[in-house]
Picture 1 (spheres, rainbow, N blue to C red):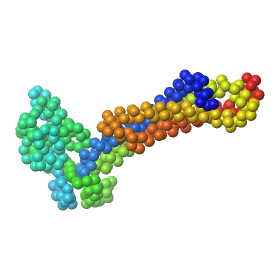
Picture 2: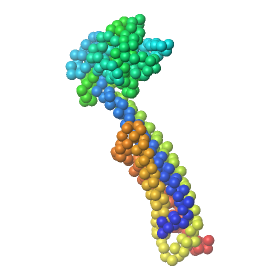
Picture 3: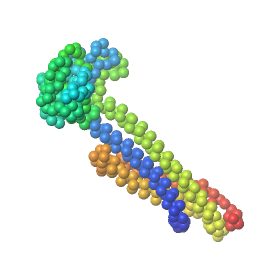
Length: 370
């Protein structure tokens, strides 16, 4: 009977179900988008999961990491590569064009950098590495000279530019450490470990040796790992996912109001019919269940269609953002399809409560008279 009642006015029923579809798509699609963005950020961080970065702390009396501190770090870390770095900025000119780049002085270039052409030598004693984007911008190729501090360095390798977290991003010039010899201290020290477990252990070891009260007080050296970055990104992404779900829920609340209107109109139109049912012995609870079933049918129909449409959108999003369309089937993202469907059915039933209560409690005599 409930299904037949919905079919009496197919256009009105279809429009109400469409509102549910849009609401479910909003919740599920935005939730899955947040998961896909989070996975993309985590994948980017994966390239530096085995790195510990050390920079001067707030309580460091020097302008950087001193030679004595570097030697102590090397003594503490015997099972990982320690790469000291000095940094600066300069303008690179070629063929009448200028580009501002960050300059990094380093010896073990192959530990930090990946090249798309040429080589990143294990000991960079001469020559230079230049980011691929800058080389393309200035029209430079392998073997071309670049000038820094009045001295020419020939390009030995072009750096990958895809990794936005690690070294090797756009706008970087890598020179031998001796090119920045006028700087007394090191701007940073990077430790390359064998894995994430070693990364945490080494970070704690250095923190205990240099910072009297941990990382919050008397900080001589600031120590960062990918776990610190991941923690910040995860917190931001969780907040973003909640915000996106809140935005999507607004659409479903609007759809619930539409269902409330549909159910009220339906009960008003069938007032006499409901009065007859009550007069021949149909109980209030049965009238109540019938109208609530109609609302549940609307929510179920709209929820299923919305979940299927959201699944298709999820395949496209994961394919574009993570390169793995099947990632949408993992519970981290698929749960939003379940949430959207459950919210659709629940909101629809809640929207039908008042019309059902109103119809079930109306006097049969008054209904028949009307």
